[in-house]
Amino acid sequence: MIADDLAAVRERERTAISLSTARIAVCSAAGCISTGGAAVKDALGAAVIAHNLSGAVRVLGTGCLGLCHAGPLMRVTRGDAEPVLFTKTTPAFAEQVIAGLPSGVLPLEQRCDLQQPFFTRQHRIVTSDAGIVDSERIEDYLAAGGYTALERTLAELHPEDVVREVSLSGLRGRGGAGYPTGLKWSTVAKAAGHGTFIVCNADEGDPGAFMDRSVLEGDPHRVLEGMAIAAYAVGAEQGYIYVRGEYPLAITRLKTAIRQAERMQLLGHRILDSQFNFRIDLRIGAGAFVCGEETALIASIEGKRGMPRPRPPFPAEAGLWGRPTLINNVETYANIAPIILHGGAHYATLGTERSKGTKVFALAGRIVNTGLVEVPMGMPLGEIIFDIGGGIPDGRQFKAAQTGGPSGGCIPAAHLDLPVDYEALAGIGSIMGSGGLIVMDETSCMVDVARYFMEFCRDESCGKCVPCRAGTVQMHGLLTKMTHGTATDRDLALLEQLAELTTRTSLCGLGQTAANPVRSTLRHFYDEYMAHIHDHVCPAGVCSMNGEDPR
Image 1 (tube, rainbow, N blue to C red):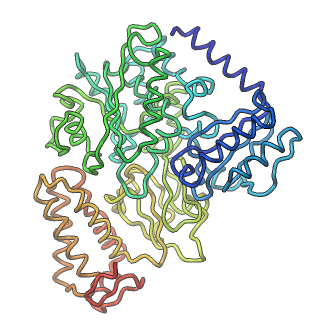
Image 2 (cartoon, helix red, strand yellow; image 1 turned 60 degrees about the vertical axis):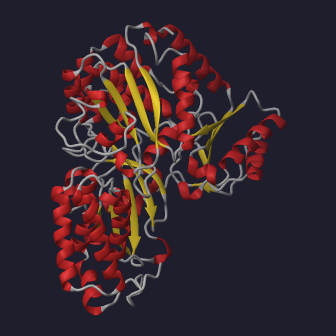
Image 3 (tube, rainbow, N blue to C red; image 1 turned 135 degrees about the horizontal axis):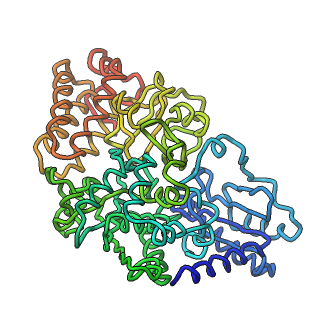
């Protein structure tokens, strides 16, 4: 397909949209589907036919609309009028909405205030298509400007120009480590030769995290376009998306998106009639948390057991089958098209001096507005939790927030003014991670929280290196003694030593960060450890303290 043909598809789709009197977007992400979103969408379609509105009303299944606790969500857009968002919708409510469209009278109940901070304080880049684009129609993505960045890349830019824009943007890898994306691309481009690979790490395994899943379910073409631009920049012709088998909806929509893009000559051979060839295949992970580590992921794609290897050499020089390999995560690739369209310098105006752009977070735990949010880097933690998140439910007090999943740290109330960026989080013993943010109130015991995450890391350790394999087991045992009220000061000293040893000597990032929940809770909630050991009391009332596990 040449650019003129693509422009014709865009124009045809935009004309159809402009002629419709209303667009009704139903959240079709896994969260809303689990609460009946698919039935709501089907009811809307049936009602449109029953009321003879097929040419006037367009119903689409869209990506996550953010306010997950209030789903299924429905967004109604009519001409130039302000969109209306309805919460907790049902098939019967869908019929009411369609029946009221001809007269312009929509139900007053179940409306959500779009001027509340949850919406107004966000800055959407990665999630900007939610409510606009149908997750399963490439035509919708094209009408919204999709693949324009790829067109511009192939028509106007040399590979080094693309790398320069990404470097100028200051984008850092959103998978957790925060490595400068432009520098990684430059390294792969310099090492590139025949057989260079592109990999998208979609093995999102952190408890409470669903950012990458939501992007893949709601806007898969955004990720494919970013990967294609990256492949052009580093000279790759083959790409892989390594996605968790626990994400069946994301897998289905990725397969659909890849077929659609190939059909329109946006993937495959001679893309847009250029000399650029790029193919994307899926590889399904079996659920091992360690495969989120890039060398373990590479081993899994190669058909081997997913276990990390020492570095160097780094994947940028010797990755898949020994060839230069570029690995970024879902959110990183989803940022690429906007950077190319608007320029790296524009993207760099967002965020902080060393952490540019926006970050998508999954708000979970003891917070009013559980869901998906995207905010500029550097927003204070307290504003995310209390302004956007709506604070703590049931009148309880905020106690801690954990960022970075099981490898992250717990941040106390004293640091609510902390700017959420890579350096600030590292400075208090936490990490950005992929973007999970779990909020806890005074009913959480921080010793038990550390025990829970250590249990997770223990179970997910691949066992290759002794510090992680044995260290996580021993730390979990010591924490269990503390929650049972049978630990001593000697156990506490040993826990601190093991946390330091595991961090310093483990082979890969899983082991190197496994002790973060322990170290951060010891740092910020030491008095709770003392209460468990000396007073045989759990201040939160969670632990039995009688030598038995209440769970």
